[in-house]
Image 1 (spheres, rainbow, N blue to C red):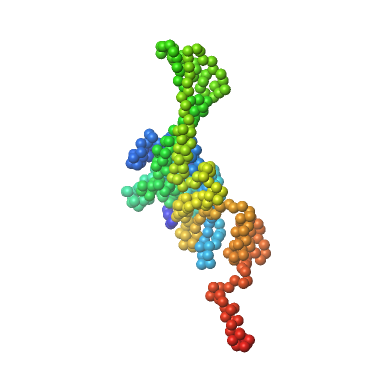
Image 2 (cartoon, rainbow, N blue to C red):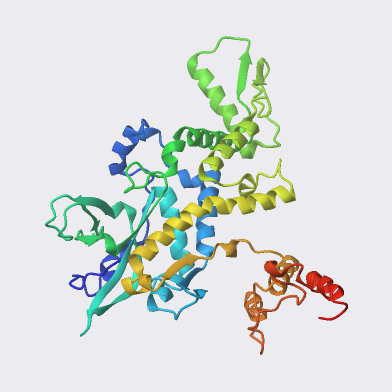
Length: 438
């Protein structure tokens, strides 16, 4: 991405946005109501506390933690292969501490959480162009998350605004504390989005397509919560012989409700007057297939996110081998997410000279596949003996120091190129034909 030398920026814009790092808990934005209606969904039916639902929360937690635990690497593609170039200040920010308030793990986890829950994630790239005699350098001072509720994406259809070009995307940020409005170019904002989108510009959260499934989850949670509050007591019917007026019935209901309902009534003996009989209305969770329905709803939500059942602790139909396979399959769900992040980072952080020289940022997805010490030793041994890794490269994975002579590739001496297979046999036949003379 080319950087504009005449870029206008505040000297210290982080002062204007530092208070916006606290993300609002609103689940349905006012500006998203039109989107919901367009999708055929009544906004009033969207659950208000999605993050309080265990399945939804666990799915977002798995993705957010997975992105947060992956280290971001800086590579360079050369004629001799992929190498690790000299580290830059931009790489230090992206891989270690994007700003004064959070580490890289927290920052990337926050981006993924906002992407999945809100559909979009915005962060300000605080930098400026330093003019020099020949060209200039672009310095980045920090990367700051922006409150989703305070950012509006606008298409510049006039061409007289901050971009000066018709058809460009700009980001309008409204400071919730000062009321000040700032407009940023697309090159100044990291805009990560969910795959679910109608126009390719704004992402939509997965919960919009899971409204009905999450309604069932929320209803099940409410049912269990009320059941626990009532001391796991079912509904009851009072049967009496004489006729009673309404006031007397209400008095009896109030009297026995306080003694029979709630956790404080567990194990207590309640005296019943003569002529009054209390009959419970059985409401078996097994008969209603409550657990099966809850499991089905949880599996449907997991399928929508691409999370495997074992990752939300559904092990009923899983064995060790299948759980391990599911962990590997989760990387397939992450593949799109990682590619989306890498494309946004490389397009807005790399200087034209870096891109021309083959530099790029890439998440190390192998970090999520932590194996046992025994399995790791077998893999590294095969790589070294197969001439893929040098001994020192294998020691890097074990956090061991390099040794002298460890930068040489080694391979079995009996191996020969494919083109020379059978050469020794041909020489042996030729020697016999010539009477033992070579």
